[in-house]
Image (cartoon, rainbow, N blue to C red; front, side, top):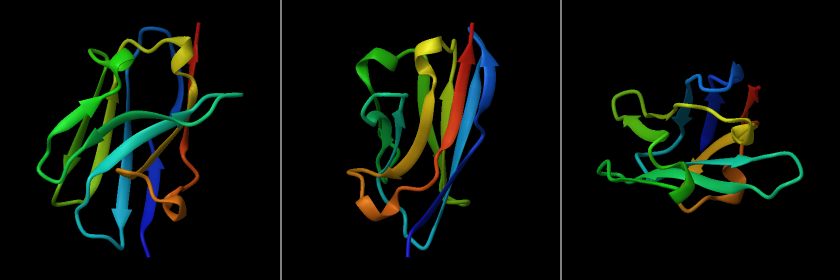
Length: 113
């Protein structure tokens, strides 16, 4: 059974940076992605990384967010820079495309102005 555990969230000020982590177990290396859900909104795609390390970031987040993976530790990271209040959300990792049964608790990111 795939288990995905997100960590690294918290409260930051506008303009600061944060790095999120996703630890995967019970699965071989797969294409992975980060998603987020802001209050009152649907969950949306943030960034993805292929098995070979090719990345793609949502258009409106390019230049601020990057995704990377550590193959040895089977972890996926999301580096978020110049954070804005609209980045406030619960951030989730999952495979790409996402599998329903893989959604975890997520990690809350709150950007305060």
